[in-house]
Image (cartoon, rainbow, N blue to C red):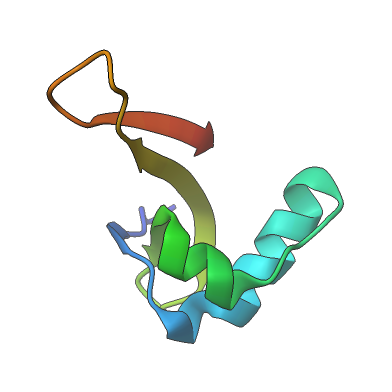
Amino acid sequence: MQEEAILIRAATRRNAAPLQRLCAAFNGTAEAMARALAEERICVASCSDGKLADFAAGLVRRSFCYAAAYGEMTEL
């Protein structure tokens, strides 16, 4: 069995439809991906053939309690 290379990269708008399918399979719902891609930091794992295999999403937040922004994972 030959191992297949996996590429981790930032998601783009071109990934909206496959991300919606992955999200629906993950939690049974899929919100508007265009808005999510604009508001969240989403990374995708894709196979060498370009097909998306998985995703991770997070938000960059700011708080009045801290000088620096911090990240929050929302989906993995």
